[in-house]
Amino acid sequence: MLSIADHSPWWPAALSPKIADGLTEQSVWWANISLPGGVDALNQAIATVTDRLAWMWVQSCIPAERRKIILPPVRGPKTTLPFRLSVLTSWGQFLARICR
Image 1 (tube, rainbow, N blue to C red):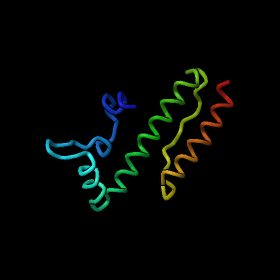
Image 2: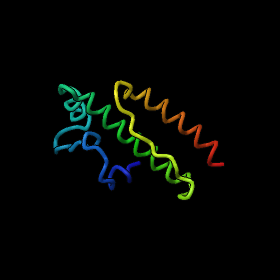
Image 3: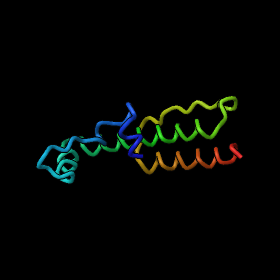
Image 4: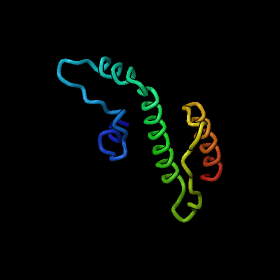
C-alpha cells in the first residue's frame, strides 16, 4: 500500500499531508480534520482509494477478453464508507464467482 501511495499520481493529497520539521504526524492530522470540511475531505479521499484499489483488483482478476463490465463511480447520498465497503463486498462476491 505504501508503494501505491508513494508512486500513484491519483493518490489523494488529503492522505499524504506534509509533516514539517518540529511537528508530529498526529498534530498535522488533527489540524487537517479540525478544519471545516476536513472530515468530509478525508472520507472522499478514502472513497477514491477504495474505488481505485477495487478497480485495480478487478482488472487483475478478469482476463482482458472477459472484461465487459464498466463500473460507474458511486455518486449521490450513499457515499459513506460503510456503504462503499458493502458495494465493494458485493462486487467481490460477484467477481469471486466469475473468476473461478
